[in-house]
Length: 162
Image (tube, rainbow, N blue to C red; front, side, top):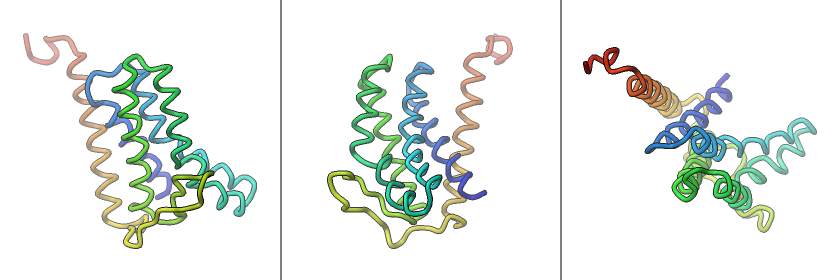
């Protein structure tokens, strides 16, 4: 359950980053993808614990992944460079949340070129109050964006502006 909430926090934080400024839906999804897709490297669990340990927090959590993703963003985005910048922020927020918010396997940022890794000895446990605050703050941020978007898209009479 907590792992799912942590994943939803990745989605929510990425959505909040994507909501910065006026973005098309395509640009927002490219930004969200940068903050969520790194966890695809966890698919190794389907082949066993050894495969999971070998690639999780390496293949999708590294420099090679984000460079390839940013090339895709620049090719597909409506506002290329601002979207690429926010996609990079979204990706690195994911890494920060993994290192500080869960610990676990280290981040191998330079994989496959190096096995050097990042960890943080003071990381929180998944069930910590700190993660609860981050998750709650993310939920409030997403709800606020939804409320603001609905209000801005509502007719003037419904907003009380008439």
